[in-house]
Length: 342
Image (cartoon, rainbow, N blue to C red):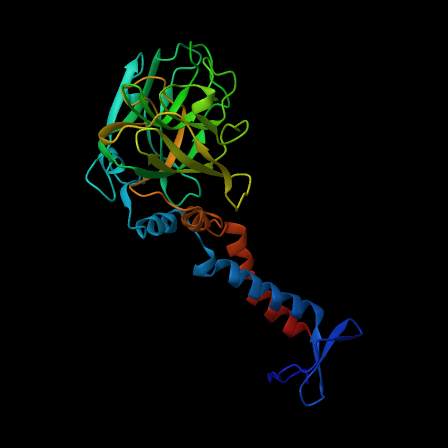
């Protein structure tokens, strides 16, 4: 049997162990002897092949493709490209991002071509002078003329550069925001609904005033440098109010299931029609968010939790690491050495 290369279907799943070897019973009643280490190598090979298979290698690139499968996607910003103009390009619509700076900040403070969530795409960084007054200095991007209707959704993959903000009258960091008069569309902010904000979770404030009653708290305390998937789905109820739910997962912490905040209903509405949207700061410049942006998607519909979860699923398994690839390469070598020694 030692020189045989034949393989038999297994009849019994209960192995016997004799002399440090595992014996499995074949369908014809014969015992098939297998060295323990050979069996472990075989199982390890199958496990690693499963890990490295295309279906297991979820990436940010696959997330982008998944988002494009949603019919209501109107603007997609991946921040990928060779030039900075490429990185500001709208991958779905026609509204490319423009650079904005205020106070002592300059557009040179913006960062491009940085490492994104899993290394398969690039990230952009906004800038805020810390410590300093709310608009002492900063740089951000703007999406000019985004059209809002009675439903709206977004999702973003972002990393806060600071767990807290300070030195200003308000201490807010605007991540994704627009406003016309008293109609606020602060879809994603680092702040808690108070002025000034004593704590700095991710939150969403809409309507006729920035206050706790109009603010949906999305997270607890943030961890600087962690990557978060954050999303929101919004429906205007006429001119009275908005009902929405936010979702979040800390990717760095290994969270794989969305945590929902809401549904939440406020007083007042967000503006409709074509509006400037600040990405990494206010719609009109100022109070910027210090952090990294890997992806930002904007939708004209009110997406369901299942739709967001389907996109999140594309981010959960990173590309194979160098040790994993090395281990896979060593498996056949170890197998040959074991066979020659037996």
